[in-house]
Length: 431
Image (spheres, rainbow, N blue to C red):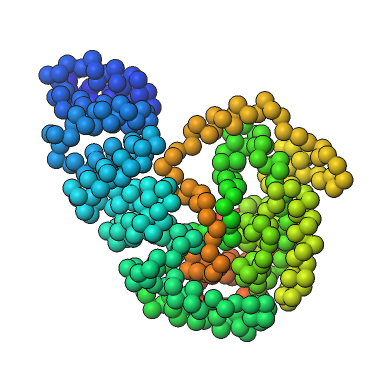
């Protein structure tokens, strides 16, 4: 076989994730057919894709002396050390990558992710800013700046337009109270001023999200739990102790009011809460708020304590229910939905499911830039929240919720939500 044929075969086995076969093909190929340095690069790449991090490092280090693209190799060694849990070493190699090529945004981004893992959020923001300045199409870097500003404010407000805009919105909204929240006239004027601030930057401030959280240091880890459920159709152990208060709302105005209320609401454990527009097909109620609880008793106690706060806001009409876990579980396990308020629940965790949960935990990639932060969100409304609220406004516009006119009449981007709603418009309008 000629070099071209061998390389095509190796490429095919890599695409098919037949990594051991690919390694064998490289090692058994005639060195005159495949030059030695190319073989080392292939082996480094295969071990990297195989997630055999130690072997990947070994071969990348052999390739380095004869490489013209050292920045890429340094970056991959950094990723390998990150996944081995050696974060300080990974930082060293990301910095070497940046030193070799200061315009390599991927290394700046990976450096930021590592700082974030080490809880050095200010350094993480600065590195995400560098990645985004280099590559304006790096949406993850942009989104991470917005996300981290939920948790930390950095001293230099002018290093990036996103940070400067976020600060100005913070200042505008820092004195929200019960009286201002319930006034639709106040809200309309508020969003007019917010648009004025955003428009001065003439930048693409956008988030493809529809949920606003107020978080504490607890990790709900919902994406992980749904991976377990979607793969094995089992309910994770964690979810058996998850109860939530669901507040169903009639219109977009009330969703905005509830979101602002959640920001100033005082709960003993600072329970996680969120507001959403519903985009799941065939799931009723368009506008919802949730308060997450660790037990049924806690949910009932919170419900009793916040009733006066809810009455202070001029909601059109609300419905409050207690739910066990997530709605997606109910079709497969109907008994999980039913709540017994006076004793043991009808369904309990099957201990044989634990091994299946462990399979998912092993597969989850450590280099996840959306990794949970063990930190409370700041008690402030920021650019991140505002951009999601503008998505809510687009949602309301699409489903023809006329109450939107009471609080907002600015320009909206409808294109990003249309794909989610186009097949359920009649259903959403009827809700």
